[in-house]
Amino acid sequence: MPSKHRVGGSNPSGQASFNIMSNLKNKINKRLDELEELMNNQKHLTSPNLVTEHIQSITKFWSVLSDEDKDYIECAKFALEKKLEWKKD
Image (cartoon, rainbow, N blue to C red; front, side, top):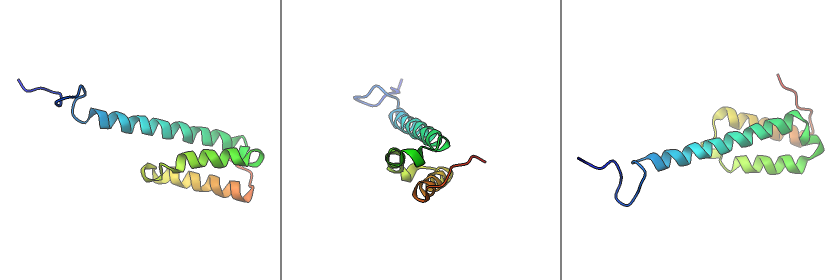
């Protein structure tokens, strides 16, 4: 009966890659949720450095972000730079 595991590893083939991507997506989503909270609480007006650093912690994953997430970040950066009130629609 063939083995389900690779030689020298305890994870099924591809499982490690899946877990890494899943963990990465969870990390990104958590940071996006935190950015949304910061923006909704107008922290980009009262603590712009905090928001800038938080955006930078997300944009390093730019290549794996969805277009929707990229648009959200661009809007947040615009509101930060122009010192605009953030309104949810």
